[in-house]
Image (cartoon, rainbow, N blue to C red; front, side, top):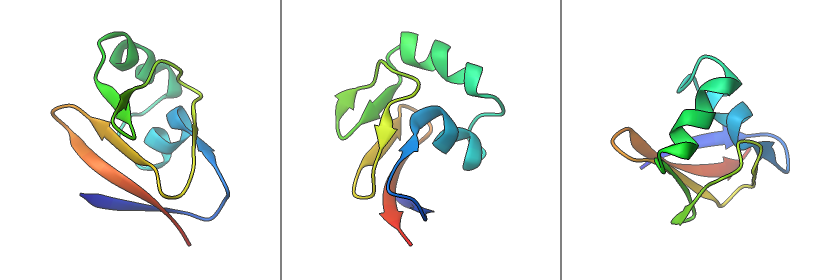
Length: 71
C-alpha cells in the first residue's frame, strides 16, 4: 500500500487521482467508476467528486491501493 500525502482536510476523488498522476484528466475517472473499479474504504465509489479525507484508503482494482495521510 502506497501513501499519498495531502496538506488539506479533504480532496475530491478525481482531483486526487489527477494530482497523483494516476489519470490525466478528471473526466477519465467516470468510466472507472461506471466499471466498478474504484473502492474508497472498501466500498464501491460512485461519485467522481467524492470527498477523500486523511485516513481513507483508495483502491483501483488492478492498479493499486493508496492510504491518504495528512502532512
